[in-house]
Image (cartoon, rainbow, N blue to C red; front, top):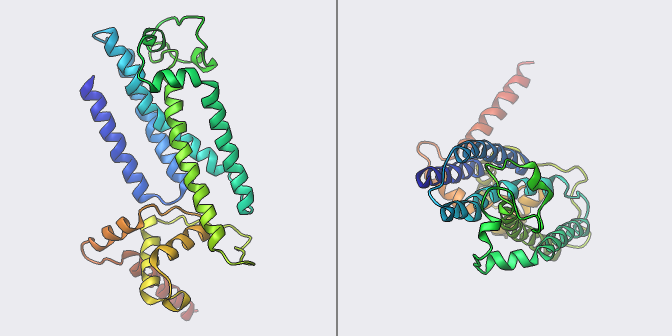
Length: 282
């Protein structure tokens, strides 16, 4: 069991890092990660359903810690996908209201489950045999209706709730960071400035956009060169509806490329020359 879980964690982390690095579109990124995790959970479910835990303590540990930690990643990315899909395309005020409404829903969830949340986060164990062992639950416990729809060989009465708590904690951080970015944009954008009504999203690779940004910055293309790379990257993120993440690290990877380090710029030159050649031949 320990080796299977360890290998599963390592595979998930490696694949998610690859998706994060290669995919720039937030929606496609979420879809890829969700698909990966759903496939992984099918394998985990099959394994656990046919596995005999050596003790109740081992079973409790799996359903109290191991499974919720892994399942929370899937829940988190599903929530990110839904959040971004429903994000208003209007003003900063519209977006802030939407995000603050999401935070209110998360707060309601934690308020509703305050007793169990305190039990779990305090490290209490005296009710673990009711919460995290498989089998018919104590009918007096407050259960998610979702419980009755799950496979009893792969679920307990409260492991899903723990996973949802962990996911909501992560989602709170994500939303607060988006609110902070909006506040920063509101402070920095001049009066009267508006983006184009048509919303364009960068759908090529994230590294390719970073390559362009550093090229523009090196050439001093904006404000007569009186800007810095961080300001330029944040502006481009807003205009092209993308989160570049740690673009400094991405640029480091670009510098370490073997052969040509300007793959995207080289390709753009090729495409543009081919286009002009094609027009010249008409």
